[in-house]
Image (tube, rainbow, N blue to C red; front, side, top):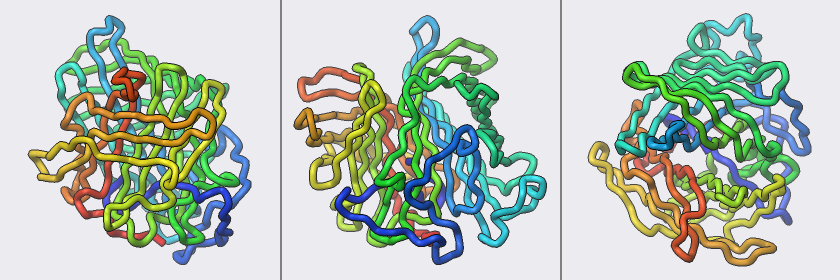
Length: 376
């Protein structure tokens, strides 16, 4: 899931009984992800310049070696193509091309209850570039790369004031491909599809530098990579999205696409990933997303439903209930435009017996009314 200024990107897939064949190109001339594509890695960790929108997204929960301090982090790189006739330029001609890059970085200090975040926007050039052959990003203060063996990758995020997070991220589960026939659908339009690839559990190890002091940190992270040439469908105001990493070694991804009237769109879904990486899913008619409590930003005045209850019918296990509660209230990402502010933060997961069973990240987008632009 994954959000940036006035441009939308989200995932979803239709009910398995329904199939809509996507066109080869969007109305603007960008390529559209096609079904049954089998990605090849590390190549497909790289940029897909002929597609209109792309993002690489990391969130996670960390603690210091002593266990005395805990953090949540978000690091996201967005690539937005310009004229599709120019978007296939080779990397050697990158400077001055119409590819636009955005870097969103945030750090939640759960011990001091402080939230630090930054947005950088720039055209592709010496401060913004992405390899087309492997994971090789350098966008403002965020960089990511993968070594030749491909078993882990590094993520470096720089924060305002000289802070820096350096992590080595190692998958402990296979990569997940979301969607029907490899396509994650996010609307009724034929081109409203994406390739959506995720590492749902990454072992995180590294260092965090703040105020001139460097400490070792470790924890667990989540990584998304999404490629599309479309945006949210008409009549949608925004989305609520979460990734949960539970203590039993499973994960849950859930989201609702919010209609203008507040109802959940039929493309909303819940996914469960088991200990071995197996995937099952249900759609909007088999789960509810209920707002339990909210928080109002003193900066923007926006109100976000930051405490939620998700109840879903697992195909094998029956009804499952998850309460998400923020670990600190103020995790609002304001960026460069107040109407495109969103809330994205570290949460704990609580079951129906009021037991803490894991950690989550929650994203609440579109509450400022600024998600009106369309790409397709």
